[in-house]
Figure 1 (cartoon, rainbow, N blue to C red):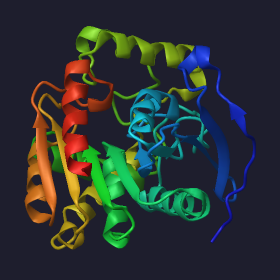
Figure 2 (tube, helix red, strand yellow):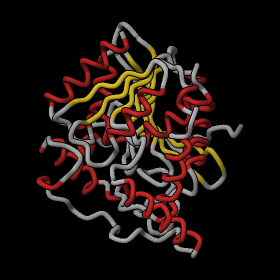
Figure 3 (tube, rainbow, N blue to C red):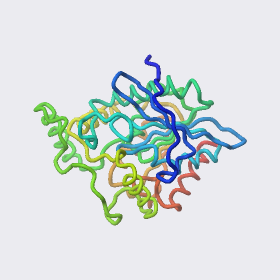
Length: 316
């Protein structure tokens, strides 16, 4: 097992992202790769354990400082990290904005090394997992082989499958496979490109204008956090991992108590796939927040309050 290598320890400028309460460090899960990780320590008198927070595709530590603060108030220490290829972790390609991963085993390997070398040697048990979208997908893969590690697991809008018609999905997977075989794995998929400013009225992530503008400010003040669309290789790796997750008998072996929180207005991940997996997975409960868009944890207060209510009830 590779030992985590600490590169630098610093405080983050609160004027940029209000993360002055977090300690930010780097580790090296393998040669040539650096992962940026963060720890938010609770100041609560009653300590309840540790939450591992796994973010979605294209996200970064700064995006979840509010969620970490909410967990700190509940007595949890919070660990999180930027996935390889995003945030301020190592990017895989010369164009930093291209969403790329060779295989989801790379994500799983990074997660396991983070757990083994950073979190578990120092964190206070019991451990809980809170994971969003792609983070929820990787979290489920990890639970399959480590189902005794976390006491309880909460997934928000997990990427069980992509929201699109089955025929189109089949065609897109075949196209991605051909594109990779022809040597275009590191190229953007058609229609994708570097990140461009988006109007609030057409965004598919949140109905909260204040939090939407906060994310824009974070990217404007820290442009190194930005990530654009996905490459053919990322798309093919995702389709292959989805097939693995949805394979017969896979989630049936996950018996950790699990709460899946779906977004009723989600246009990114498939609600039908979430329902199907919930039915197949022991001790898995599904709650739908009807008015929520995909980013439940950066949604309007009324929706976030609903989330924290079901979260608290599930953990207690």
